[in-house]
Image (cartoon, rainbow, N blue to C red; front, side, top):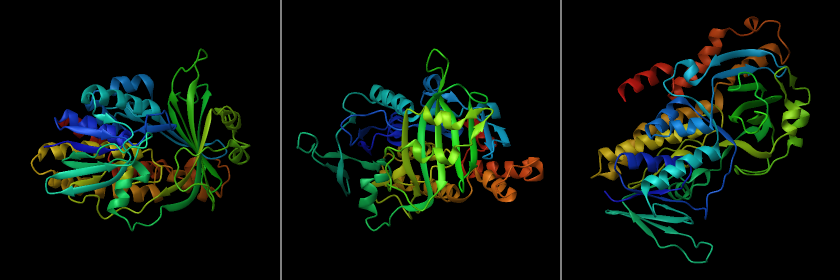
Length: 419
């Protein structure tokens, strides 16, 4: 089989390249940016996706730069503990849950791809204009680069759009698709140097969207002589307005957040002080798009955010792109003489799975626990959480999400035994 042309060198595209290399399938990564820059803030890689990165030989390197999350804790906006349960290896999973700076994850993937694929296999400044296909393969044409000249077209067996939420290939395949759907919530994200909180590896969710909700977790350990961590925070709140349709790197301001959390001074964290220490603040509307009826057209398909952009709740966006990559690479290795059939098989497995995640992220992610508590208490402190919501109800919510997203413990234990 000829080269698999990977349009986009983000987490999904680079993971696909590494999975293809592992399977002996040749590929080329074509990235629009002239150079890679350290962008973004924190993400979580759940155990099912961490297992795939371990298969690629990256677990040790990622463990050095990430925080291995050990606990999920839920609090109301008064700082009262609602629910807590173990995460990753602390919960018995065969692989960890990585809380990591996106730049650290991307850097590890990029180094591995350049080392393993070889010279000239990760190409920069290739901004896709259009993809054309025929019976023998795919040809990609590119926009002019910084010099004013367009790079030469590239020919391959298939092309995979891993070019994110603004995917050129998605627009080509679905030119009449509607606008992104705004959920009614806006978010601000930042990172702050801070002393370890709670267990030092806790993913904390605080409050609810009606009055403001925060997700807080460390993404780097021991960043200075004081032993501080880099703490990632996300603030979300219901609002009818937002400034940008979809720009992950739009600068934001803590002044938009501080009035909402002025009283959030808990025994384990002074939230206003932590916000004031932020090195970077970004703003983003909570949007997604309705699941597509198909990703694959002959020798062209989509992967990751280009295929299934989802509301960033449930810590699962990057993880689903990693699962996509494994599935597609395996299908292409099984059917090297019929790549179009391989793309169709990939879609048949992953489109229904990711559709369930997109729809569940809209309505019933793990933080739905906090919605129930907010509604049942009338947004007031409680005397005993057991009088508000049982632990069985809470575990049912988090357990259901794990099953939908594909990382319930028994499934992953079985998969680890079969691998």
